[in-house]
Image (cartoon, rainbow, N blue to C red):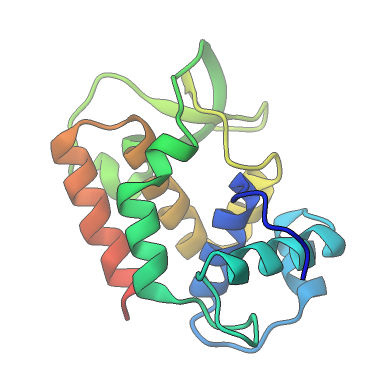
Length: 171
């Protein structure tokens, strides 16, 4: 096995995609296509996640409790984010439609994308293919927006996002 050099942002996206598939069978090429990540990078990512204890030996099943702990307590420190300038993009964090109805804010956050529907402060996604991937997978979209709340949100928002992540991750 190759030496483990730590998690990468796309590892989180790949694991969330596997979770969003809800135990449906999948192949590396399918994950790669749906996430706009090369098949070789998906394969290497799965190996990193296995070495980190976030995937079982088959590299097909997410160790959900361990992954939730990593997201809840480590993600904001490993992949920090400071919102950038005002841009057009896809709503994320508390600007996601699910959270928009529960969190009142005059500030919108977006993943930069010229085809996006709103203006907001830029949040760099964990991978450049995120806006394409979430257009095809509403569950992945909600999970990644929840992750962004952990990266930029306040305590109440973070608590709400963690509860929502638990519903999906700890099935």
